[in-house]
Image (cartoon, rainbow over all chains, first blue to last red; front, side, top):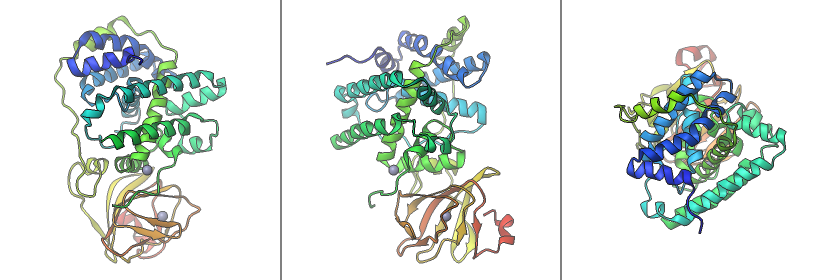
Length: 178
Length: 211
Ligand SMILES: [Zn+2]
Ligand SMILES: [Zn+2]
């Protein structure tokens, strides 16, 4: 069986041991990507770094909420980053779904976590294989630059439905295990 | 509680997950996800999509001091944001919009009551309570209308909507929802424009009651 990705290992060390070295590793990996992501939608370098700092501090402070069977570190941090951007740019808090109850016996289930990692790896590869125009459209969508109407009229967004199917299967599996 | 049969379409979940959905609709979608595992799974899939974009986007060099500034804050005291759990029929996001208080209902006549959670020029989101057998004020839509059932059920030309079901209506749908027998039907409803009620409340009163 494959081992957990370095990002997952670092994140779990931060969550369970408050490991600062692991946090630095997470920072070194994600801070430059977050800055690139935030600047792509037109934010200047200085403000982008302020948002990066807030996001990474939130990662440290909310680490307890991270569940490797449900989210990859990148997806979890993506959501924190979008919340912070909306907070800063639109001056409003995005309403978030209720947190799901803890499921400790499943949390330790390595097979679910590894399935999720493999799925995310496939997602990254699928993204890399897209035509440049399709890929640009996906990036714009996930940067929050497409409206609901634009997303519904875009037939060139192939990731959503495929991924939701696979994810749904996992979620059901998890539910059945309870 | 019966199974949810009316879900958020993927485009709506994608718009919510990517943060491009206006606030009033985001509140309804977040509430539906709170009640619906299926849509939560699809929403989490879109978070994974966002994560993949984050992983593959061209990185930007960060300034030398950013890391030390961030690390120096790790032990700084901070106030965690309050967590609003579900309360009765109200999912967490609604409880948060109510700031943990009970809704203060305003009568619209005929036993229909509403509680506006948020309204600005871009749209509004409210709780509606409709007595069993009573029609929702006959109305048309200027734009997108999302209605999530929290208690009881209603039926209209397009079907029956029970707890957790989400109805999506636009300007092309002129419907006459009616609360089914049983408990009063409590809904969370968001529109991008003031609802235009055709009866029950004369149009002239609309600014006063903020429908
Ligand atoms: Zn659903
Ligand atoms: Zn309607």
